[in-house]
Length: 122
Image 1 (tube, helix red, strand yellow):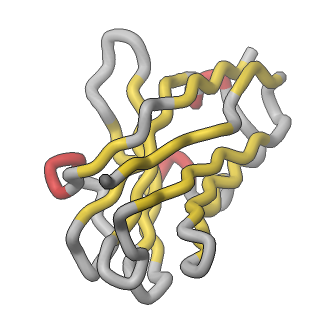
Image 2 (cartoon, helix red, strand yellow):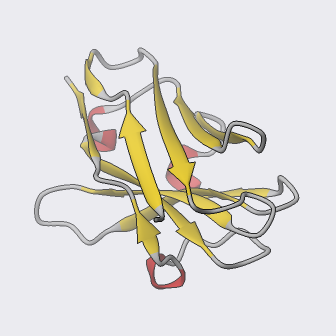
């Protein structure tokens, strides 16, 4: 009964902000690392940000100091705050869960995935 349901996304102008959400059921954030991934047309899926069971985070270099991943363990809700958005951030964004105790940007680590949310920056 594991399910990851995403919300947020949309069309924004460069330099503006957007916040993505992911509500998880059937997984416990105390035992799963969570991550955000994105895939643009013609590109491979890329790990954007991840947070482990203790709250330690990791980011791909291109989003450092612009994006922030966070979570609410009680509500089982994951967030990605995206600031100073650039056209190159345009992609389908996915949240995912991994049975790991550390953050990882490798998509192979993750076994549960959300449905995806489109982010377009133009």
